[in-house]
Structures are given as C-alpha cells and as structure tokens.
Image (cartoon, rainbow, N blue to C red; front, side, top):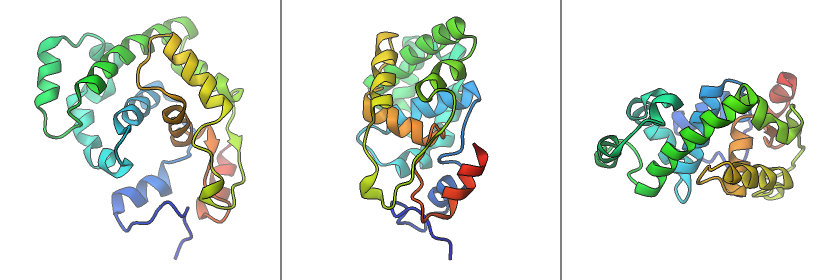
Length: 191
C-alpha cells in the first residue's frame, strides 16, 4: 500500500490518479498552465473532486482551453456555458475565464510565453518544501501573494493568493507532497 499525502482520503481512482501522476509535477506547457489556472478559479468554494469529475466537460465546453478561442467568447457562448450541466455554471467564474484568456494572451505577448512569466515567482525552478504533515502546509505564501497581486494588476480574476498557491502546488512550482508521501522523492527527482 502506497503512503500518500494525508489529504488524499479517498479511493476515487480519478482523485488518486491526479495525486499520483499530476499534482506537483512541474508544468511548462502554456495551454496546460492556462487550464489549471482556470480550473483553480472554478474550484473556489468547491472541492477539487468536483472539478476533476467535470474536467473533461470543461475541456469540451471551453475549446480544450484554447485561450485565443475563449478570449473571443461573446454573449451567445456565455449563455451556452451557463446552460451546460457538465461544468460549474457560475456567471462570475465563466466571465472571469473569458477575461483571464484575454489577460493570458497579453502576458504571452509580453513575455513570449506564459511559462516564462509565471515561473518567475519561484525564480524559474520549483521550491522544495519538506512538510512532515498537512497541517504545516500554508494556504498561501509571499510568492503566491506576489503572483496574485501581479495577475490582478494585469486584469486576471479569481486569482487570490490562496487560489494562486493551489495553482503553484498543482503545476509543481512548489513540492507540497508531505515527506512521507511516495511522490515526494519522485517529484524531487523531476526538478
């Protein structure tokens, strides 16, 4: 039996697969970074399990997170998204996703890639934490606060410091697997 982070208290294969193969792995692909930024914003106030179960629907409804397509969404598409039972039907979050696509494209234009921009908040490399238990893991950090402030300044929505920290954890900007989790050492080797 593999020892996992104590927050993984489920036998849901979707959730286990996410923890075991995706969470904390450094991501440098712009489209994947954009997808996770949008999904973290959609998750606000909800469980991550809810988002994982709807992720394929999100990909379908949001043109596989193609920011250039999402940036062009108008009222008709917004209403279509609000009617879709397969995603989170929250008007503010959907509108934020469209705005975030526009801001994302502006950042890509300025920096050459979103990856170059976003990874500057950890000096271009993952931060290696060594938490003994989940209670030690902070909900936000000075880095996630700086990221949040800069994203908001650039027009992004649903990017508070806690959402930014969850994003940083998801895309491997920080290794927040606890040291007793089998993934902790595996993730360190990816750095």
